[in-house]
Amino acid sequence: MKRTGKTAVKNKGVQTAVKSVSVPEIKAEKVSFILVAKKVLCFRECAKIVMAAENTGCMVQIVSGNKSGTSESIMSLASLGITSGTSLVLTISGERNEEAFHEIAKIINDSED
Image (cartoon, rainbow, N blue to C red):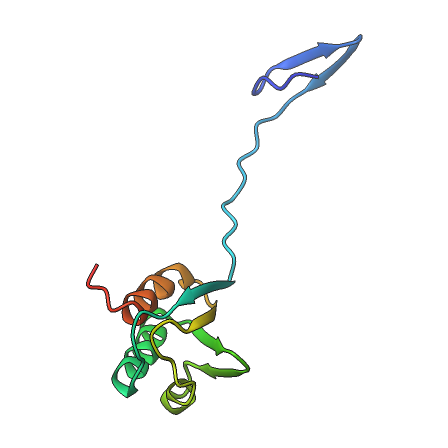
């Protein structure tokens, strides 16, 4: 059967009404990214990550090797010992996770964009 919007289509003697349906955009509430740090993350950068998470209403978890830290604690992020070239896995939970990712990526990559 061919779909043609709101018209009826005959296919092999069977008449079927085709109704157009709008599909809502589905947005994931939890996403993960792999990122390589381009600089050392000190307390200042960790505080900026916590602020970015708070401003977007998201929860951020960063995993580096076998250690992990969350946006609930600056100390947990600072204790990861992230240096330039360190591979990180960011998991961001919340409705505005894309915005949070862009803000955090700017901080980790020392970018002004």
